[in-house]
Image 1: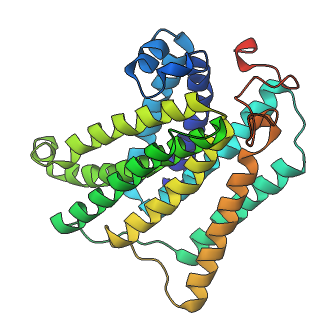
Image 2: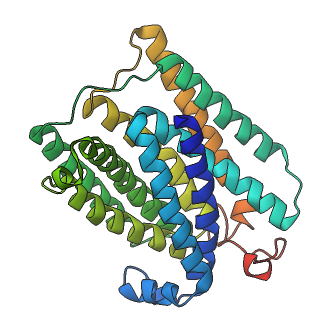
Length: 303
């Protein structure tokens, strides 16, 4: 059930990413890191549909986290890129080439290998104040550094940096989601006497804002690559060191887990560079913004 919920969340997120990309791609370049970007998006019906799907994505993810571990749910969300490629292939009527097939196989193999080798187990209880304080400081410093790096460079670099910042924040948000769903067992009145649900809302909005900037800054390939690579890795670290989730130890298991994650991330990166996502090579990076390639019809011609 946990795997099914996580996979459904990944599918919903893939559709939402496409629709929201359509909603912000026409915004002026000067709207980056300004609220005008969101006001522009709110006037686009396709973006609003994507936003509604993001809410569905969150509910599915939260339910999966209630019954599963961060080290299981977040890596499974990497399959979002598989769904994204599949949707784009159907919409654009494109045949899948070696890049798509190898990337998909690497994601499936790496994910299955990690879950089989690690056999993640749910930890005991909630993190203490010291653990939360440390991880909060690290997360926000890392996010701020990535935003600073996103202020310069070609469009693919800015999209990647904003995407990495959003991924870090969403990993932290997933940890807060898991904590909040655990608190629900004591009743909703009990939940709102703790700080976690309020931090959940604030970090969710901040991560969402960074995601919109990533989608607006450059190619969806660059931002999605960072999302599918950074988010699960940070989530696994948070699960192990903050929630005390247990993975199989021992040199053999640890080596296998690292290799499996590397294969999964390599597959995610390879898929993110697919012409189905990236379009034409331009602007000094992996690809131009979605739909601008002369070889690939724009999505807003299809939806």
